[in-house]
Length: 114
Image (cartoon, rainbow, N blue to C red; front, top):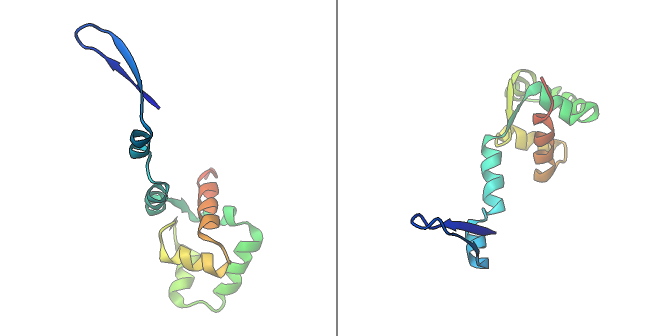
């Protein structure tokens, strides 16, 4: 990384390489970036179902038969699915998905046109 410095009086241009410390200070923490993304990531129910695929969605519907009333409402009527939702964490657990796999499914879901 480098910066371009222009002298306002003379117009002279200088290029200066950043030190490793400066690069580290300007590079966002990947864990913080991921955390912020998870806080805002969402997809529609349809996008989520299509990203999950037929076999995973069938497992959710199979679970629905024994689900609580509130879980049934989430399965049937949630318009948007939010990545940071406890419901998404639960359904990820139900399907045996890691956090990284849930992130990948959300990313894929967001690319599906509705």
